[in-house]
Length: 106
Image (cartoon, rainbow, N blue to C red):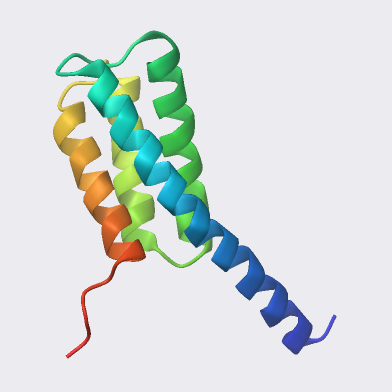
């Protein structure tokens, strides 16, 4: 496979990933609204674990190390009974927003 073809395919995958990030941000926000101040349990907790795990891996692959690290941190919090989850999840939403809506460059 030529480098050009590989680069084109990677661009398509990265574009799909960025589109999916919009959906992930909305889903994460809805899950947080559903759980309130409590650590998420049941289906919401399982979905948050899956979502953060997936984001941690895929964000790193597509060149967003900060988003990957933040998602991994939230995932770790979920696995340890969700302490401080709300603040960490809000940080994750902010990291998603920076990827999707970066500030203008000077």
